[in-house]
Image (cartoon, rainbow over all chains, first blue to last red; front, side, top):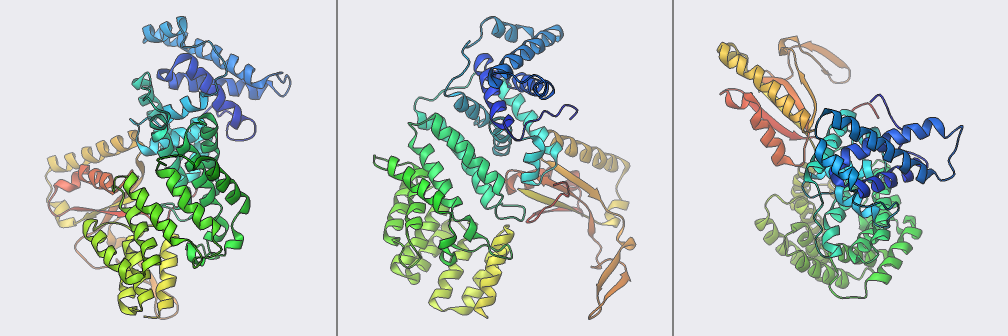
Length: 405
Length: 122
């Protein structure tokens, strides 16, 4: 890229997405590409001018400049073709207002548009909402910059053709796809399905930052608060979650004194504020489960009855569509009723979902607890072959060696 | 999620290809690269020299020893690969079926997940 604006760090990270959101509010999501170009140009101009002539109100300066650049671009576009729609928009903008509390929401909804592929949603959210540069995103995912640039370009083009964004009725329905994208972003940071590090602190921090923005913009959403709590409670475990050789340290072996207490407290406080109320959604339920873990000093004194009950509700709420939830329910069941019971349930689940990841890892742990050393070793070997996560492979090999089979 | 599509080739099969088939293979790979670059799924591709050019370096007990020829003696060998980044395994397999080799008896594509990756630019 010949004109790389100074986005990606410092105050730009806050200013750029807000400016983009304001332009999109004025001109509509159909103009995503042009709006973003205009913001980039305004940033570049700011980068050159501000050192000698700092504006009194940087946000207002950027928005005004970006609007001018947008108009310039529309005029030059018009000289080429595609005139009618955009000129009409200039004459009758959707809104003349500057700041809107739900600018963030609009931007997130566009970036997480259900018509985009998951990887495109994630890339566009990191770029447009979190304000990361293409190269920062490429680094985070160990992908070539050209690949990310292409995905973002394609996603913007797609968003532009989609035009006005349909607004489902309730806040939870509107936020659903956004929450899913943020959740994937966070999970990938913690448990990269490809690539070695089991934790990319930057991506996890970005996911939390954007979810925090979302939760602030949509205070009525218990699921947004639930997802934020879930992220905080999960992130809190990170210092204890990776061993000295980069291997995964499972929950029951973690040194809980190394958990980030501030994050735990914030997560629990969020739960206290939103849990009273009927029909919790899937993210809130998962946060509640993480909350039960966070309150226990170790595995033995964990309230597994409560965790089991929460998984049963979660399974019901998600319509039994997610076998990973069932797998976790079985783990909790075996903590309450013993490994033999758990193994029987596991056979049923494996029969229904023969390719489900992590079944063999759970089976291996349960067989080990029962004392079937050879069967446990076989299950560990199958689990090692099945996982594509290097940190998890490490951990499973450790367990296999400890078994001494 | 990254996948490596390994292209397994057999020189005997390649020798017997007609001009039209060779042309179709060349065009097909070009179209495949164009499609996956446009979709943002393409990461890299490399074609490898003949295995008779291979040297194998391995321990003779303690120290490394260098010998001529491929590691595995076989009629088929890995002729090259595509590295792609896709949503899931199903998409990786779908892309593999778009490679022209998938329509030539005696050639094959193998799709395997990548578990560690460092592209050297970060």
